[in-house]
Image (cartoon, rainbow, N blue to C red):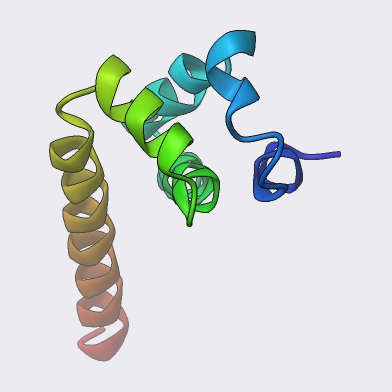
Amino acid sequence: MDMNSVTHRTFAAPDMKVLGGIPPVVEQLEAQEGNLRALAAYVLGTAASNNPHFQNDLLELYPDIFSRLRQVCVCACVSQIARWLSVRFI
């Protein structure tokens, strides 16, 4: 079972803090590989979706999480634009 499947279950997401699962996922937001960053953001979003307990845990551990997630989005957009330009004008 992958991490997203585990966190998708509402009853499991609150356990992520207790089990120490939040820091490893947040660390992947800084990964070199864009797919890992995107997957980490997706996992966090899935766990936080309609889950105030997880949202509070995440904000308590990482008050700057929105800044980190915004950076992942910016990097993804820049990467996508660069790919589009390279295909379009080669």
